[in-house]
Length: 288
Image (cartoon, rainbow, N blue to C red; front, side, top):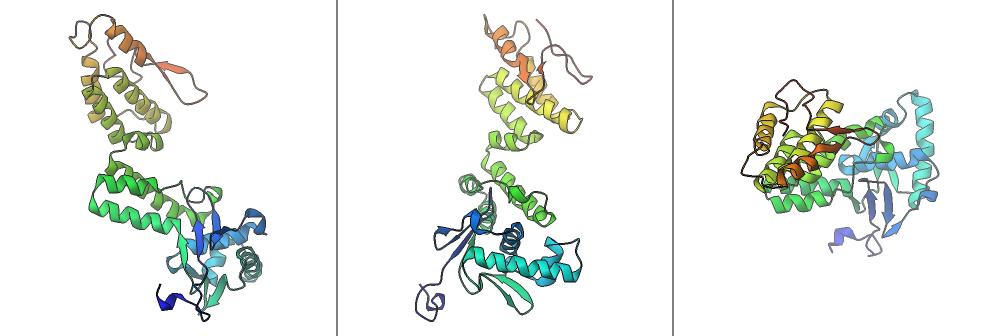
């Protein structure tokens, strides 16, 4: 341990750990500060906002503009003073958030660990290496979207989208197509990779189920059909389902068709038969 990390008594200063991914929590030297210790929602928002910033600091005006954009300077300042008091109370230190040089600083001159910072640094390093294993490891550290309980707070939007994009990039670099298709149901490259994998394994019914998953998501969410590249792969898949194809013998053809027939749509919707006709004006799926 470096001497600079010790306080005047020679004791290591307490470390603040802040979790922002998946849910919010704060820990001081390994002890969680439970929800009942946070007297107000804006006290948690103040700590979250500062934890998200480079060097964990913002000017007073920036804090007021972020947390109380609808209030004038006087009213916003009064709310900030109350939130500061409650945040210090919750974290158990009068100096948990301090004013320094016109800025509010979270946990000044003491160690602070923020999971979102750690994830982003690990993600950038793994993506720079272009190593699938490193990317898979970094992706595993993503515990969920940033501050889901503050989803509609404008000050969370930019960081949430940036971190989510890093996570998706890691999944793509790691070749984790199933997770990518789960999170991004309209991601055509991910679905094509899954369709191609199943086709190469000889499992055309599974390939068609991935196609149906993509097609329904594109139609429901965007009102469009799969693109030409996806459609060409689809045509290759159904080519093996033609009557008389050597890829299917005995009962394999009807079983494959039955397995891909009724693909459940989103919860609460009816099942859609993929074997009657396509819902876009292209070549109908062949019937036996």
